[in-house]
Amino acid sequence: MKTKKAKAKKTAARSAKGAKSTSPARKAKVSRAGAANPRAAGTKPERVSAILQKLEEAYPDVTCALVHENPFQLLISTILSAQCTDETVNRVTKTLFVKYRTPKDFAYANPAELELDIRPTGFFRNKTKSIMGAGKKIAEEFGGEVPRTMDELLTLPGVARKTANVVLGTAFGIAVGVVVDTHVTRLSNRLDLSRNSDPKKIEQDLMQVIPQDKWVLFSHQLIWHGRRVCQARNPKCAGCNLELLCYAKDKTV
Image (cartoon, rainbow, N blue to C red; front, side, top):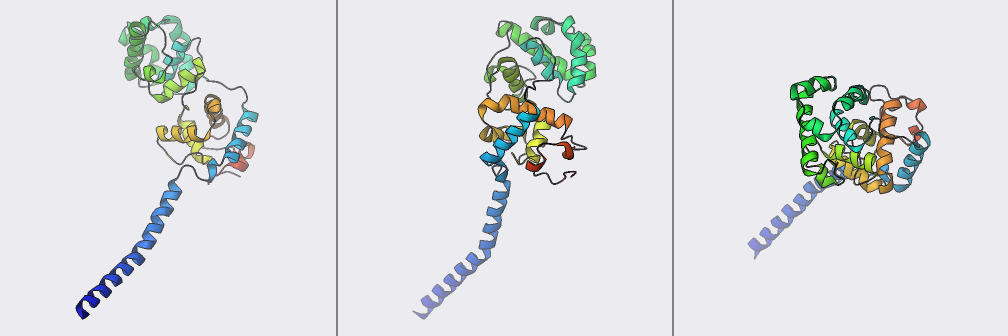
C-alpha cells in the first residue's frame, strides 16, 4: 500500500510540476497567436468606417491610372505594369495600342519585335510570352472578348488575382476581390488592417473588414494615397488626413 501511495504522490507531483512548467509556455503561445491575429484593434468596424470616410474625402473619384479604352487594353496594361510604374506603361501603350489593336494582333505578333516594343516596362521576354498567350487564348477560346469571371481570367497566361481584380473591378465594375499591389500591401499593414505580408492573405483580410461595395474604390484610394502621401521612403504624415488613425511606428510627426 505504501508503495502504491508513494507512486501516486510522485505521479501527482509530476503532473503538478508539468502544469506549472507548461502554463507560461501556453500563455506565451496564446499571446503570440493573439499578436498575429489580423483582426486586431485596427479592424474594429468603427475604425474601418473612419478610414473609409477619410479616404472618400481625399479621393472621391479616383480610378485606375492605367490609360485604356477597353477591357483588353486594360488587361495588357496591367500585365505590363508588373514591376513597372504606371507612367512607364502608359508611355509604352500610347504607341503599342496603335500598332496592336486586337487580341489577334498580339497573339500572332513577331515575338522579337514585340519584345522591343515593350522593353521599357522590364521583364519584356516573359511579358511578351504572357500577352501573346493571353491574346491567343482570348481570340481562340473566348470569341475575342475578355472574360468576366475570376476563374476564366485566371486561365489566361500572365494573369493572377491582382490582374484579374483590376480588370473585373475597373473594366466591368465587378467586385469579387480587392486589388493588392505594393501600395495596398504597405498601407494595409501601416493602418493595421492586416498583419500579413502575403498578398493573397492580405486580400482575404481586407475582404473581411471592407464592405464589398467599397472593394474596387478602396483599392484605388489606397494606391493613390500611397503614391501621393504615404510614400514608402518618405511618408508625408503631417499632410495625411489618416494620421490620427494610423498605427505605423515610423510616422514622421
